[in-house]
Length: 186
Image 1 (tube, rainbow, N blue to C red):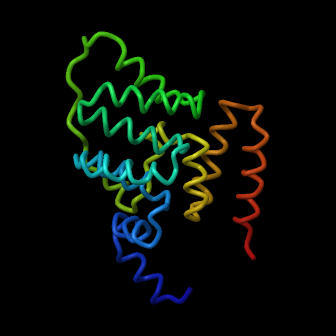
Image 2 (cartoon, helix red, strand yellow):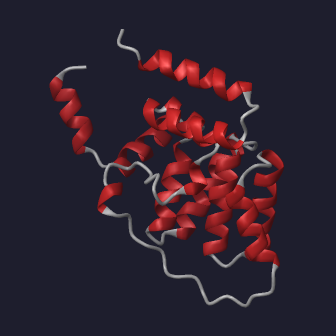
């Protein structure tokens, strides 16, 4: 890739790159990251639309259902959010975030109202999810998304965390080996 092409890529915002990816390929998994960013900025209806369209192409994508559940929850559509989180648990039984949200939605409402959405921090300006704050993305599916987008170090980090929680997952070890091979200089 020549230097001018790299500079053009950097001048494009992360959201523009994700939207361009979705325009080129409506079945792209970019809907997950883009919908998450829309929830963070308070564009919940847009996030819901992105998830609904994306999940038509990927009905078994646990992280897509997780983000959809978060968007439904942000829209105060609790019954539908509960269904989305139950689907996540069905697809990925070890997903702690879905279980946590299910618990919150099924117990009597005693908690104070949720804080308004927080705008992405400066650390998010590159369009990548902040691993320090986003435990929700430590799923096998999200690692696959990062791997497919060429973010091999982030994919490897998530695969490692998944393996810490589920050490008997040989499929995760195989994916980690595959990512490590992709990271080696050609």
